[in-house]
Length: 370
Image (cartoon, rainbow, N blue to C red; front, top):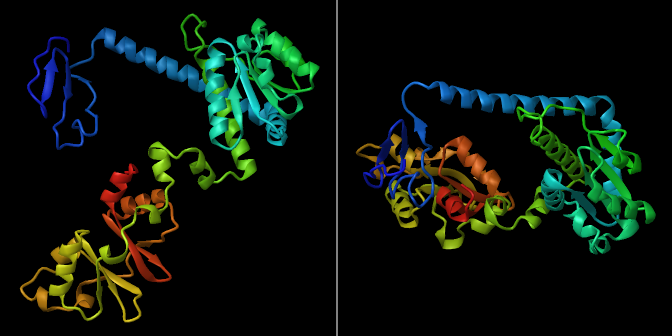
């Protein structure tokens, strides 16, 4: 789309066979959301385009075969080694030290981050840096080393491997070669089955790194589940971003006190509508003489019962009985799921049958959840 004319915000820009929608300031695709509809091809696919699509499919199919082979190996003999690796890391009093060179190192950084965020203290040590002082970061018998090397012969891992044997530090190898130096040195060897790389030359690490990554995820989740790691504990490590917002409680975002729109049984609809208008949540909760919530009236209820005599009717004639509610100690993510499945925009927050707050979909937007 270089040098293509821009027709203004909220328009479709077309250049050759490509088009994309820029969005407008008030649209979901506008600058407020920093989102735009993806560029799409117009017209029939050319031979070169079909070739690129076929290339993508071959890559995905090759990598899917690798994951399938890994799953089959765990069902067969690799499962016993997997259990031993999980138990070794779970019982460690210190941390899991993840290491690897090249692409295995990049994968190792992600595995260490996943461990750390799911209740297994872990960090990555570069094997080259380990040989120049970073071995001091490993707390001998309290720690466990998880070393990634597809060949199992990575020279840079030698000093780290020797250190682990000298000081009796638990060593787990992730390799594709059962007879490799790393596998023989390790306390537990997780031998990944052979798989062809997605690269047409069978050279660039693609399928292999995905399998390493998937095995790391499997280890992290098995550790998480064996420890009984909860969503609340997860939230303690993820206070920021959308994950942090999803792990807030309803009580953290609900409106309370005089902000809650309420009316008693027997109240005329004229007063209930005035309450709805004043509180701006598009609803009013209906309570009995004891203050317990017995119903709700929403904008939708008003539309369904619109008639000349609506203002003179009583709230119990219009209200929806047994309304959907949430508790203040429920996660915000649960409130969002309830709103989505019920296709509603507000919920009354109830404790011991009595309304203590109200949550609107806009509150979830402001909190960064929706």
